[in-house]
Amino acid sequence: MLVIETVDEMRAWRGTVSGRVALVPTMGALHAGHLSHLAVGRASADAVTVSIFVNPTQFGPTEDFQRYPRPLEADLAACASAGAAAVFVPGDGEMYPARAPAVEMTVPSVAAGLEGAARPGHFAGVCRVVLKLLNIVQPDAVTFGQKDYQQLCVVRAMIADLMLPTEVLEVPTTREAGGLAMSSRNRYLGEREREQALSLIAALRRAEGMAAEGETDPAAIESAMAAVMQGRGVAVDYAAVRAAGTLLEMERVTSSRAVALVAGRLSTETGEVRLLDNRPLG
Ligand code: AMP
Image (cartoon, rainbow, N blue to C red; front, side, top):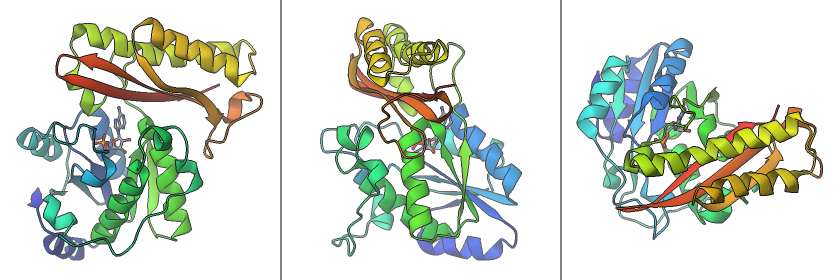
């Protein structure tokens, strides 16, 4: 497995691969969810490359960019055993040379609410780094996780709009035994906070149960989800029911097209941890 730090070396490696290439973009601190992307990539391509880059432009000034975990040795070992052909680990200066950006990113409307509202500028940063990575690696396919459902929708919209020749491979969410969605940020959680974090999946299950029993009022489902999270001391950023794909608000929940999405914050000894999750209804 090659470990590549520069754009030039990555382009050179890409030129040596004759078959299909899949890219798995990550911010590292890899867990089983990320490794499932490698499996999806390997099933669809001849060579898989993983990028590990904690992208500064997608973090707000008060967010956890500095303390985001960076266990590079363990990540490289995980990539090697999961069959990556190359890992791209550029430094900040390689991805963002010290000059003002020549182009501002204006993100699609699907980026407007939810994460976009809670994290101003986040999706512009995501689109900027994903577009750079796609231009550097020129993969035939790229994986994105349903875990970050709005990100998946935003990236799909960007790729379609800019007519990029890259197939998006959608990867289901990998969960821990109790249902907690795996996240690099879970490593900040102690036992008590893990219990609190389980309220996200509990809220989504509640939404699914209500929809299955015939509840069609999104507001009723949303307030029930928020109550589940608040009941365990989680500060709710949003608990929403939206149309799948567009993330538009719905007047009535029709289960075949709806998705429930939650985000919340809980305090730990080392600071606040923000978690998100989602689940289709029906
Ligand atoms: P991140 O390193 O958090 O930026 O995530 C990199 C990719 O892995 C993104 O496409 C995420 O949606 C995806 N991902 C994160 N957590 C999970 C999970 N539990 N299961 C599947 N994919 C995930």
